[in-house]
Image (cartoon, rainbow, N blue to C red; front, top):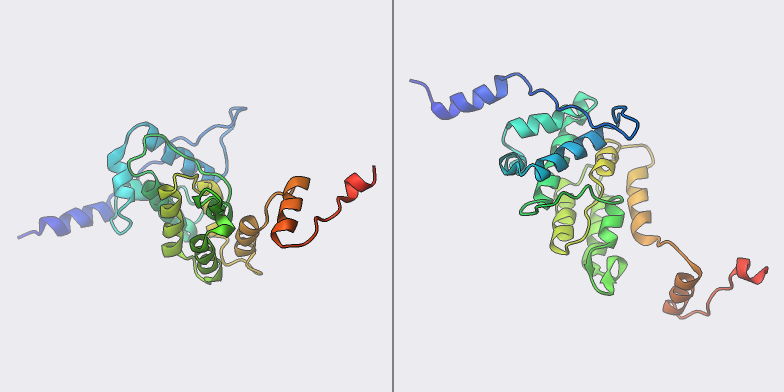
Length: 218
C-alpha cells in the first residue's frame, strides 16, 4: 500500500528541474549576465503577475517546490544554490500582501539605516544598531538576523536591500578580510556628507563646526 504523502514528496524530488525563464534583457537587447539581477527580475515578475501561489511556496523554505527550484537554478554554481533559495524566501516574506514589487535599494547596511521612524532611524535606532552588530559579527551567513532585517524594513514600510546586491554579497560572505561585513557597516555608519551635514554632525558631538577647506580656499 502506497503512502500518498511520501509519493508526493518523492515525485517532487525526482522530477526534472524546471526550465528557467528567459533571462531579462538589458537596454541594448543583450541578456543581463548577472544571476542576482536575473533572479530579481523573475521574482518581481511573480508579484506583477499576481502569482500568489508561487510566492507562498517561496515562503516555505523547507518545502521542495517548483518555485524554490527555479530560484535555485539562477545560481551560477551548485554551491551558491542555497543563497538564491534563501534570497527568494526573503523576497517573498517582504512582499507578503504587497501588490507592487520592490527590487530593493543599496546593501543591508543601507537598509538598516532606513529602519525606524522620524528622527529615530538607523544609527539613532537602538534596535537597528543591535541588529547590524549581530549581522556583521556572524561568521556564517546570518539567515535568521537577515530575516529580521527584512521584516523590520517591511514593518517600517521602507525599501528592502537590493535583492541582486544581497545575492552577490551572500555568495561572497566568507571572503578573506570579511569585505561584505565591512561594507555593510560602512553603509550604515557613514552618511553622505555635505557642508550642511558636516556642521550638523559637529554640533551633535558638541564640537565647533569644522572648517570647509574648499570653501576657505576661495
